[in-house]
Image (cartoon, rainbow, N blue to C red; front, top):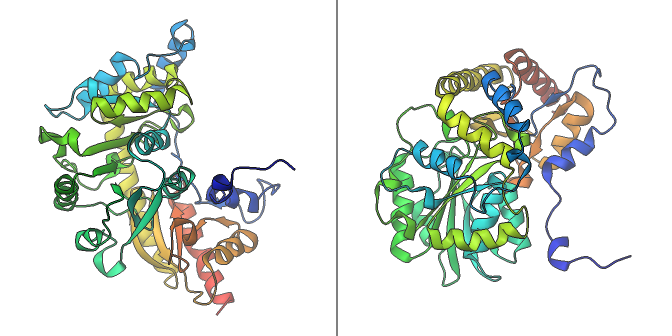
Length: 389
């Protein structure tokens, strides 16, 4: 057997893939029907106008060619305009093959093996996986239910060492769904700025916030490129998950390093997808506003449904997610999640996938299920609790 990388072998298997394997070969018409809350996937197709535009572009030659390394100029300009901040230039924007690549490029541009990055736990598992793959230490910053699952800046300050290169924030949060207040985001930015480390801010779910006010004003600070790296995904807001398109917004000298890495991976983000984003940003504001209201209604429907399963405590919820404390005190979360899949045809991700000290939790990604399915989900969870108590 061929020897594999010792570094890669230490990276855990993808949690969604593990969960999907639990139901491999299961019939789609199983009874009861599968309720899949394992992955954040948009529940609807892209807007009809966007699909028509994609079809039109696909008929030409341009979509089959590589784009420039940073992305199509029109797409980068559209992304820069979408922030509506005077200090954001297209020169600060790189189009990436999804937000995961944006994170990978950010870490690759900033960090050497042996460096440290502070990440609130529960963390987005792909972030920790990539850090480990790069030989970079993910330093957990535990968040607490009695602090509304918000990262504590004082606790963060205590974790900083000479090896700290960045602090990561994800808001609205994956897996918790929590929206971070602007004041908290600014406080972390100012701290990172004061000690000369990067703040990596992932706002994949920013269009599904409860408020229409700006989430922050970091780009109003002319010195933002000295500290901030901003990550975004167009997968959720425009239902383009399979098109693999996101963005990395940073100082030009950081993007210069990111381009080197991307050239060895994807060369550029998919050209057709970049055309789709430019069109969507110019034409789909009303469609996005409707999707936001739908998701807010879905969050409320989930919270209402879960009243029927009080044994599963909803610690936090919002955007596409809920973080739930399961009632099986003596069992690992993975055991609980697999039993829900095996016995109740409910597929979710165990909290242990999201960092240390998370075995009492499950993540439920409800963005693609109906209100009726949420009621059924709560019903099955209540039965699961009653059968094992």
